[in-house]
Image 1 (tube, rainbow, N blue to C red):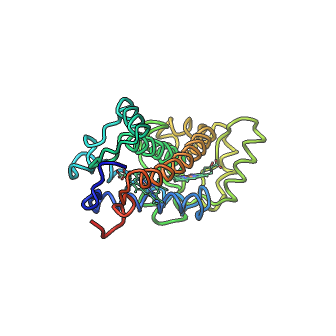
Image 2 (image 1 turned 135 degrees about the vertical axis):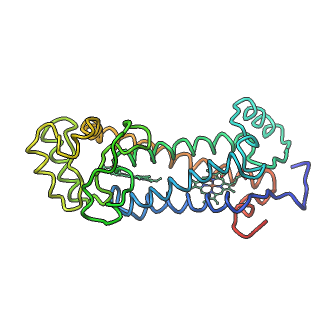
Image 3 (image 1 turned 30 degrees about the vertical axis):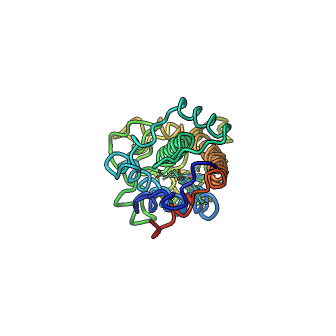
Length: 264
Ligand code: HEM
Ligand code: HEM
């Protein structure tokens, strides 16, 4: 706790950093605690989360100096140096995230990206039909490039899958003994049997994109990826909060206040 600067010791996060931070926090908390996993609300909150993350990443390129990636490069070497600094009791003031915090920020963003990509791969991208709600079993767009990115893995898969449809699908998968064709989750849950009629799961709308069929079979594994990433996210959040508390006590800086909207 040497090197104290009683005044002006606070960071200056711009409104965009604050907005995206608390927006992301709200979306994560909503999807973790409030919305039903896989429900329409869950997916819509998920799209919002995707937009917020995209905004923040864009801001990392074009925002003010302390918000830019260049202000907090991911550097294990610098993070180790920071650990040594902690051990020695020395405090250096950083205009942006400290090197250890920077690694945590990139880890959280990467994990969020996996959560979002796997979620969207299961649910599909928002479409005009989807905003219409329940009758959304329409082709979203062709050209899905497969799982793992944010393309629509399941064109037309509904954004409003209800739990009953999901359970019905899970039961079918269990009976089939492998990651069988999931029901197109069109809220009514009616399309499942239609799917069963066609063992390959190829419906008219899938015909225009052969990959859709393949991707749908991957929904099981995608769900597991989603869940594993979410669990990793919870761990990182716990470490993040511990880090924020630790850094506040260690440096004496009001780093939480620096994140509060309206404070500069
Ligand atoms: C940090 C935010 C999120 C959290 C905490 C979260 C959490 C969860 C959890 C715990 C499940 C249940 C997993 C399972 O039982 O397999 C789930 C399922 C699901 N999530 Fe998320 N999720 C988040 C973001 C998203 C996003 C961004 C999307 C897509 C836009 C999404 C779409 C889905 C879908 C479609 C399912 C249903 C999976 C299935 O039926 O097997 N989620 N989510
Ligand atoms: C869902 C929970 C949370 C997630 C996913 C999360 C994620 C993040 C991320 C990604 C950043 C980097 C911000 C940026 O550069 O854009 C950050 C920074 C920060 N977060 Fe959180 N956060 C969470 C909850 C919280 C909470 C509850 C607090 C307050 C107690 C908090 C306090 C902070 C502070 C003070 C910083 C700035 C750290 C610094 O000055 O280097 N976070 N958080």
